[in-house]
Length: 183
Image 1 (spheres, one colour):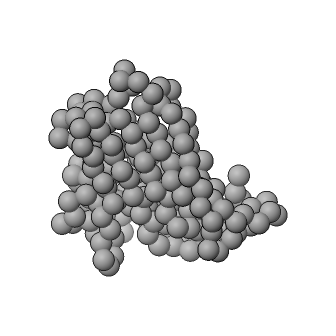
Image 2 (tube, one colour):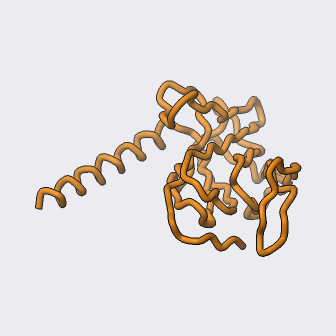
């Protein structure tokens, strides 16, 4: 009985912690944890514009170790990707991958598709997670009609974003013993 109460208490506290950090962070991941060696669907939530100005573009910098990033198209938004040569190639379905997606940018195709400051939206991509546990930081540049927000701050140690004014979106990769299958 005591174990059950502690589990429930810890689950509630963890949920409040996630909700609190999401309320103060402005670009966050819908699912902030995932298992190592698995595919992951990253849904980045953009909560507001730049000091009242509507969002016109979102650029995501893919963290090292996140493999084969593929963005989901959004109606009314143009999509571009930037590739980079990998320092450490990896294998995917028997093929050696030597370059991978480093940046993904969604840009509103017209003013009608700008994201107003009073609304929120989600930008989605997927890819493979590293085999080892640890933190992955998705840095995001939010470009607005007037100004921009660079959500790129990462703590010097650990994963607490407390005290950071513009934190990057954190994905905590948890230990997993299951074999990876990448698509």
